[in-house]
Image 1: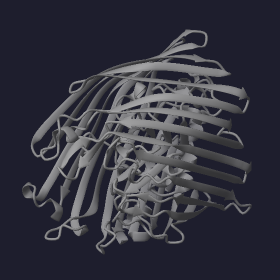
Image 2: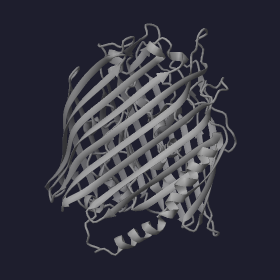
Image 3: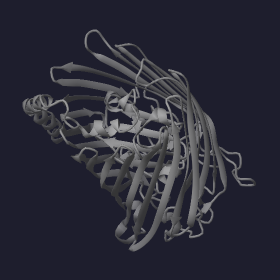
Image 4: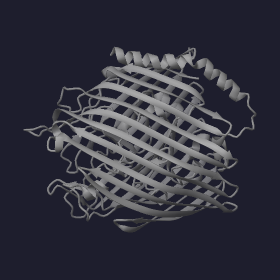
Length: 638
């Protein structure tokens, strides 16, 4: 514990010692000519003007646009909100997004899946700084949010619903882009709390002239608690990660860009030891290394915008312990890698008419037990749009040529109409597809080369009043998504197979209000009904597993006259089933978090209590969730 405390203190002391240098650099930056080229501003200025800079997103078309220019449902969470929630657990922020359901196999660092509008966690395409990071070596090819620490993230974009027209495979249920942090100066934070948990973040950056660059690093070490609800042995988590991105303008309208991320973590797990092979305490360990990066360019012309680059993501996992005695040396290792060359573009044809287009080529590779499997995909898409301040309409198509399945067409369309300055009606139709993962196809014991891609068709309509940048915002959405050829695991024949059809439908409500400069409130409610609709199937009519029908998150923040800021989040989740047969029920739960912060000179002191009333619940049957926990910390930004 003493080592953790020393580490925590050194981060804050180092940052404070650098504050005079940071202040001097900031002063020099402010003294520069106001007309100096700011690449981030220039990129946004090439797009139609947005009332709220935070409303510029890339998940809709691959090119930055204002949310008001798309009829698709998109939500954004910025740095101020991420910091106000506090802590390393990103899922505590994600639960503020409409349509999301989260499940975790134990404590922090354990596998964490995010389901959007009743889709499986593997059907959410996840990008970090625009790089696809879904693990191609994972059984379902999804992304594990347990390996992302919140301190290195400054922005979250979520598009809810299929969008394979722009992003291709994996974008069946939605698209999420996490942007790493780039600061103008230095920042640092550190906290300590329950389960002997230490978490520290340190980073810095510059935004001067033609250069925008930043780097940050985080470290976390926690003793944790037993992953198995029947166990007593602590399953700890240790991780460090580094992220960085840069942008350099060679000339007006042309810039080079690059980003990179490396995360190294180790988490304790529980398993199924001999001779009973029942879920219990074990000394299983999962070591994970995640690497991703991209180099590219951005061109901003009067009529033409281009964004291109080459990206790579790689996830290496090593599993060891009692549950892996059947493997050579008691170790099972996987290595998944995806390389992608891509180009996104937008051409302003005439007046309000624009053409969005793109092409990419992707190579994926999966290794385990000495065998290597590969696949490749070549794709192209185009979307023609009509954009005015009153109405927008866009429609397009995509063609993917997969080395194993041949061609696949997907279509999409969206539009919006503004009835008044603060009232907007939007609607969208989107198709999605997901190719079987290389594990599902080639796994030595469970694979099936006869699997077909999963496909989906989704409809959405919504009404919005106000803006997220204003004092009041309200939105209601209705959606439905029909899916075919869903892939599941056959517990009788022990093989993956296409099971048939499913439908997810429901409604979402968003409310946000700022009654005064001192108060900020928000509420997100989602109703999702996700059912198996396979005619004649064993589970026809059953709810899909781990999809609660009801989920609500309410938040309130108050800046007191004394300078202390107080806040609370309440999360209410309804019942669900852990299995497709509806034999194991996951009871609903209510969890409340309290938080407070106060500035003391250049330092902000903060603290929180998670799960205030010590609610006992499970998001995955048989796995523990953390009880009540308390944390205190400090942060400084210079």
